[in-house]
Length: 66
Image (cartoon, rainbow, N blue to C red; front, top):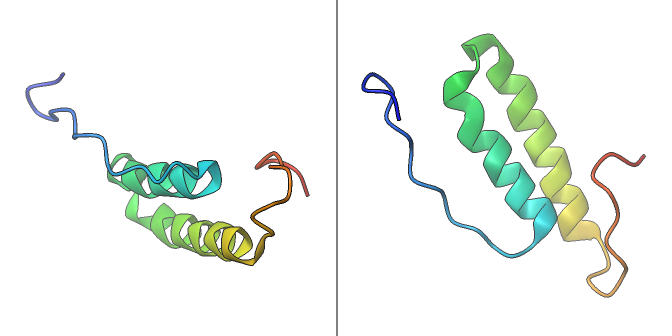
């Protein structure tokens, strides 16, 4: 823990790996330049859309496929 940047508490977790990965990427915005924020939000939106559109009974796929 840094006295200038204390560790942030861990955010909520859903138990859905794809959604939790998106949440983690958004939580990391504080460590990124403002110029990178739009790309992170666009990627988060795309990943959440894929998660919502996916078949919940299908086998999970790697986040790096595609």
